Image 1: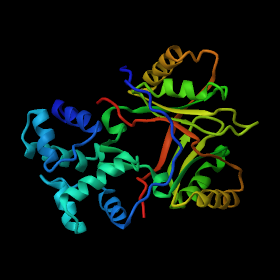
Image 2: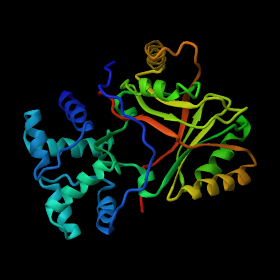
Image 3: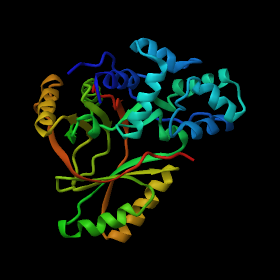
Length: 173
Length: 147
């Protein structure tokens, strides 16, 4: 698997300053961008703004990371990634950021979060979502992660999903 | 899905131009007509290969909140508990996983306070402890896979 080029440094979420027009734009495009030759001009017409302003506002939303990513959102399952496992790791607090950044580089890792332990019941503090074509492929990817990020001594559990009950995109406002 | 569809998806997972005719720009990069790109995107969305074409928001920056919550549900109660938990509109996903902690749901609410409220309501209704595990730090959220 390819390595991603850059580390992305973690940042704490903070509230962005959004005006009414930003809110209206956010609501309008949350289900998708128009599939027309001039999508931004079409949005502008609906919002009573001009095209340049719509483009500038989307640019700002990108820069302030209100929009994490702009592009296609794929359904993994339909694209042949039929297996995924939430893999959880019990990593000393001093090294969790370093190892999290290492794991986040691999393109089969789609989520990599630090979460609180719930002792004594739950010791794991780093959560990764690992994808693969099938279960063996997922396990091979986890093995590769452990080798590359030196996780041999780190306790972990692999939780395959067995049923999915509900999946909806979050709707805002 | 053919080779061109895959090329389109891989290119558009990386982002989308903010220009007057963005589809034309992408089509040129792929060496195809704009009309063909629009048709293929529309088909990929219709057949549900793509769930969306547009922005992915950071809910927390919009004032909303997300949390992952785990529950240890006895196998015999699993269906009953699932029904109760899924009846909450704030439950965005719910997965059964093969572990002692076998139910994992994600809450998406419009405020951080609401997370605790919904969880305590769920605890009362199902009569089991739920373990709230909100994100503390994010090392990467890619959701980009080569196809």
